[in-house]
Image 1 (cartoon, rainbow, N blue to C red):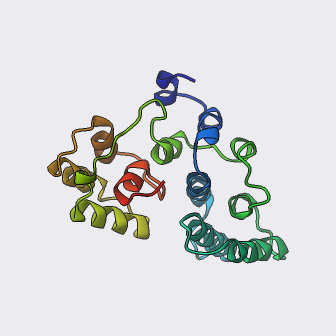
Image 2 (cartoon, rainbow, N blue to C red):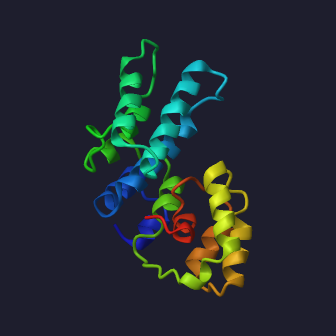
Image 3 (cartoon, rainbow, N blue to C red):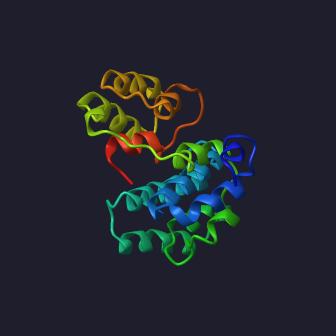
Length: 194
């Protein structure tokens, strides 16, 4: 894959296969959760509320807030539920047994915008200077991360620029319209997450 393909019209599954060998399990899980959230109906639907629940648990596991045993218990509840829990993507992203790097591109990878948001541009390395991690930038990134509402990304871009950030990739990602999700590469840089 070339950078032009990555930035252009590359097939999402090809993009995901390209980044899988070089990324963390956390990023892959958060990407899977973000992609699955797009498929869920509003949480009034009992099945979808169940899906949202397993996604919240999986996100907590990805961020080291719960143990593998707690994740396994949630996973067993999904497997053992009698309801027609239609896509097993929630089970997939919550399962240590199944979540293998080689399997992810086959089951995920429907949205290239989410892939770009989570993994950034793998053809460019970003040096994020500690001076850019101001209290304003960290507070904004943390609020967006916790609420899953990334509407303040342009404001984060302004805060980073005020702190001396002149990296066009970082600033453009903050200011361009588009999808932002948990695991967003810029928010992760600000928060010091990998």
